[in-house]
Image 1 (cartoon, rainbow, N blue to C red):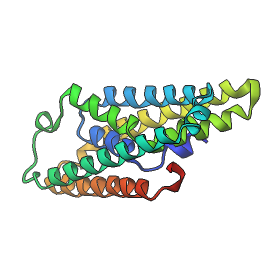
Image 2: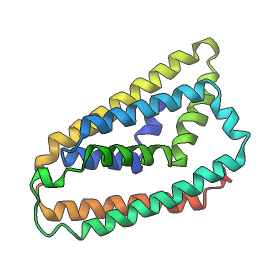
Image 3: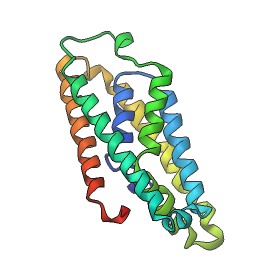
Length: 193
């Protein structure tokens, strides 16, 4: 169940994939994403999902912050795609650790879907197992660690195929379109108010 929610194409997965292909801070990004998911799953199983559901204004706030950030990120990524006039050496493609970490944190915690999936949905499902809910949580957390590790390092291994400027232009534009679509879908998502 955890993997079915995590594997869905989203802003966080696209960023992990991009960082892996660029061989840039991948260990840090995988760690941030996996630990963030584990924390959110833990909070959901501990009952935060019920508390969030009782505060519709909080979901609205997260929704509109998420829409704004995702649209900004999509536009920035699209504009970045126009700057790939020639292949840059890996050292030039890499972003700084702090910038990469900040982006990973924002794509995780400003994304309303992450709260619906990990805190509310997985928390609700886990709590149906009573005393065994923590075993369910450990399974979901393990799935998250395996997914992000596999995605990041598989992308890194496949990065040799991403050596052309044309590849990066197409990849960045696809990422921008996916993220913009997610932002637009949030605007019309009635589950978030």
